[in-house]
Image (tube, rainbow, N blue to C red; front, top):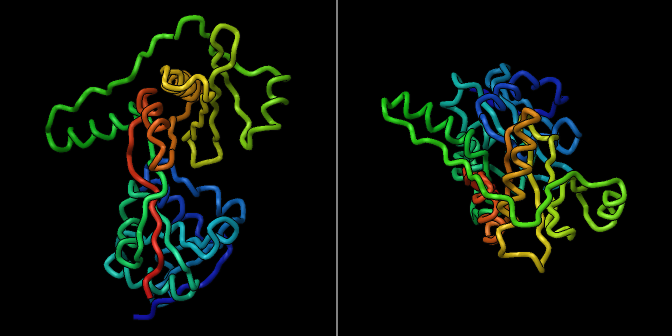
Length: 269
């Protein structure tokens, strides 16, 4: 059996990549890397038949494998194929989401010094649908989704930013916010979402002013921006540092649920 990995234009592996995205069924953090040229595509073949592909980051996280997919009928040789990809690309690290099991297994089988970088979140209602599907297959009664209904804080207004505020925020924030929470005329929290990840996911972000923390504003603005995303036909998702307990609590109170971790490991030699 001859296993080869060779660099190819991203278009050449597009069909397998769509299969990868469909199988993942979740927000893929590095989904935009290949289309934007931030990663190189590699076709992996057995006896000259392409049965898988990998993606090696080249701008952010250079020399780190961020995607790997093998068609189901060839997965008995997947680990050997992945090791061949690591050798050809001279990758130093592998990155994976634990809610994408196939890629996670490759990481644990080939790397060392594994660490979790982020906690991943998905919409509570979307998570509940997945649980319901599992319960149906197992003939069990599915748990009902718990969607928060946090009442609006007294004196609050959740609104879209003005043009003047957008210009002001652009000077101090790397990612432009879209919405603000105002309490008695003062902006205490901001929120928005990015949509360049695999559709239909909306990557939610928020921030609460230092002087306004521990008052429940974070959870409330997450709840409200999640509603905005849903109304626009998107599935809310988010992530935060593993040590950011305040952010995690706000995301969970606002209706998101932890669904995995973003992990990375050093390729074992």
